[in-house]
Length: 117
Length: 152
Image (tube, rainbow over all chains, first blue to last red):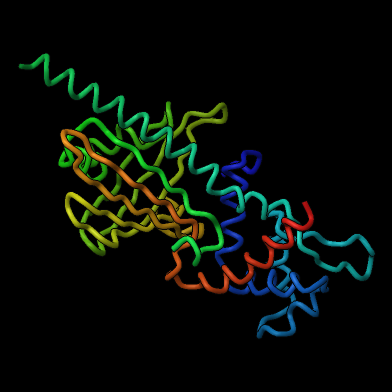
């Protein structure tokens, strides 16, 4: 999947959201910033496992991490969410294109049938 | 379903100049389906199209890119099959072996005869309300969407 296209980014975003732990992390961050230790607390998983989830969410542009050396709190990143919010608009274009092609294909079938008769 | 999903559904209504039986086959016959479903320049390769409730739908779109042929696989299950009026299936991105790589979406196709033509009402829902985890997703997304809106 190509992350430079909207379609590719959207796939990353949906893949990142397709996990209950990661959604819970996002729900927690919607209440305010938190560091990895705080995010790991409610779950029965190791810090490295939480770090992996954080990395996936970061790559999907769903969260951002602060730059302070020791304490790098996680916050929500609206960029990935906008892609999800725009999901319907993007798919509308995809489907409109499909129906146009269905029309064209049906016309081709019809003219073939006429030629055969 | 619109109120139960975090993302907006895509709903498209079209009247197609063909009888309902033929339009039904556009969706359910692999030979017809592959002629219109993929984007321009793409080849649709159908691995499985087992059109019955619980049957598998697994296919790839192959596109030529400067970096070579790019394959995008999709997998899903037929949830409702009422020939020739109603077809509901789930869809997620997958790999060639059928392992799911993304969230599952749901497509509903409703067909109705109107004289010689057929009216199609197609709904593509971002997150099926009854899918596992949908509730947690919705709660998280609702909060996030509110936040994104207030920030943008």
